Every structure is written in C-alpha cells, then in structure tokens.
Length: 68
Image (cartoon, rainbow, N blue to C red; front, side, top):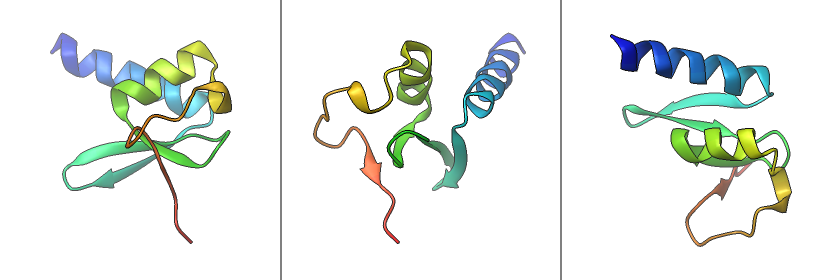
C-alpha cells in the first residue's frame, strides 16, 4: 500500500510541476513542459526535482519529442 501512495504522491508532484501524463502500453510516460519530450516516470520525477528541464544533456533514447 505504501508503494501505491508513493506513486500517487509522485504523480501529484509531476502534475503540479506542469508535466503531462500519458498512458502508453500499460505504462505512464510524462511530457516535460520545458522541451516537449516524453520520459519514463522515474526519470521524469528526477528531472522535475532537479529543475533541469532543457539543461540535461540528451541521452540516446532517454526522451522522445512528441511528433505532431
């Protein structure tokens, strides 16, 4: 039960920081409001907490820009 509460708390933290959730293939990815890239939950949380936004060096496959 604690893990579920932690995830809910983390979700609120990301939403409050302007991140947008999206369900993809039974997992949630998050859109960074600073650069429109999508990240897995744990990495999104780390970026949001660091306040890094666009200042994080782009790692191959770490984030993907939304295609329109």
